[in-house]
Length: 82
Image (cartoon, rainbow, N blue to C red):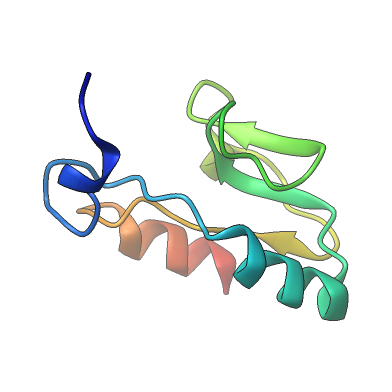
């Protein structure tokens, strides 16, 4: 069994889940409706886009949560978020 701590803060993965307490505090203020960049396991909103949905190609409306992959595509995600 692979320990998830072995890849946390490493370049072995570009997908890190947002800590629940951190998200909860921001959600209380911004009331996020859609997680635009999630996996099935780490989605923070009932309405969410996974890699299969290609969140970059979807329309983002309302208050959206985004924790983008921290790799070569982060600039594209940040540009869309603006």
